[in-house]
Each structure stands twice: as structure tokens, then as C-alpha cells.
Length: 145
Image 1 (cartoon, rainbow, N blue to C red):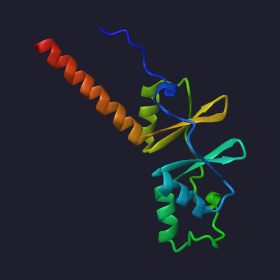
Image 2 (image 1 turned 180 degrees about the vertical axis):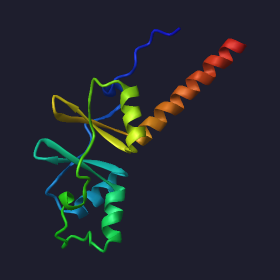
Image 3 (image 1 turned 90 degrees about the vertical axis):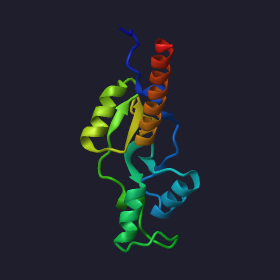
């Protein structure tokens, strides 16, 4: 039986993610997400983790008839999620994956001492699973040979 420890968030998160201020115009969040090809963007109020804005939030706003043009008065705070799940860098990966699955969360903000340290998304989880499956496949095939 393996004695490997459960990975902590610090080892699987995307560190130092881009973020946007809660009082920025919503169109800036959309531009930033398109430029960097993000689906999730942490939202801060000065240095405090406030929320997360997603592609879905932006799509919902435009579907409801809101403009995301430069002259629009719509702010990030108007369309971002009212609450966000924040994990600590030392949290074990299995705990976070259970929460993401149970609560249908696509991204988790990762903090260290209450400050933004990273982000962990469903895409990150898929990449980890793919790597695990490749390693497992190689291990099984090596033991058969």
C-alpha cells in the first residue's frame, strides 16, 4: 500500500492568478477573460477576497439585456457571485474536490493567511485526473510485462 500523502491545494492550484477589483466595470472583466482565455476570475475588494466572476455570469448579464460596452455602468459587483468558496493552501485536495462536486462549483479561490494565493478550477482537476490515469496505466502495464 502506498504511503503517499494527499496533495495540498498549494501543490495543485494555479498560483498568483489574475484578478479584478469588485468596483471595475464589467466589460473589463470580460476583456480580461477573453485576452487570457479564462473562464473564472477572482474578484477582490482592495486586498480582500470578495467573489469570483465567471463566463456564465457575463453571459447571463448579456442575456438579460445588459450592455458590456465601455460606456456601460455595469460593475463587476453587479454580476459576480454573491459568495465564493475559499480554500486554504494547506487544505487536502480530496476535501476540495468533494466540495466542488457536492456544491457544483467550477472554481475555488485559494488563500494563504486570508490573501489570494491561487485558483483551482474544474479544468485543473481534469488535468490532474488525466495525469493520474496515465501514471496508473503505465504502472499497471509495467507490472504486467
